Image 1 (cartoon, rainbow, N blue to C red):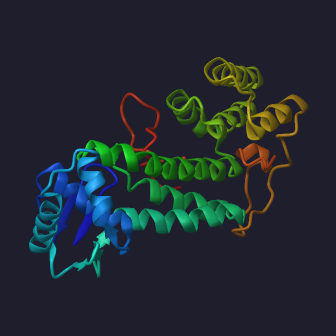
Image 2: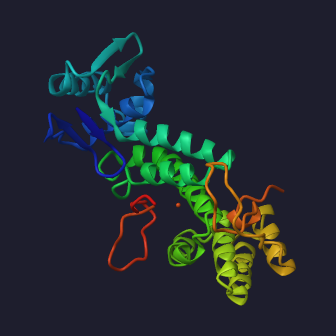
Length: 291
């Protein structure tokens, strides 16, 4: 049995899609999956399903939704009723969100350990699980509540994958992807710093500086703030030429790299694979074949 929530909600039993009609039943299922076996309270479910307009029959309706899930998916999963909520255990079932969390954790650990090839492989696999915008077929309140957290997790993984790719000398391949990502996420300073790094290492110093200036204006005009430490440090490193280090160093995977390695170059100063679309260099959801 498979559950896919990183995109439109999909459920499959023995390879065949099992339809779950209605935004409210899908909301209950997704919340159970996001809870990873923890108890979800009746109050939480009521809020996600109806926000501030819960009917008097809310508890009975939640019971009905849980019963529907049992009928569709037991015995492969187990839904247990507690005095004030429900929990769902997946058993042997597979969930894309759980797999994303597992691969992301391992991949980001590899970034911290400077195992760049391992990192880009794991994080690329994590991002490939995203099939498009998340939580588009649940209740509006659940989408507003949960989508920012899920999107933030995806962007962190994307930034980690880009950092690893930069450390592997793949700056030429990254410029188009990062240009589109920065246009989509103009306030995401680490992505902007990574684009500046890729441009600089492609001998496009003027474009890198222009990218910084654009970001500075966006932050100042929209929010009245200055660039943060990562963006500022990358800008200073470009001005002083400190992004370039000797090539052909050996990385922690035991292979010889062809890149100039520095933490600033990867946008990791202390102070990203998407499905290919014909009109975009790479989308921000992350399907790119692993290197």
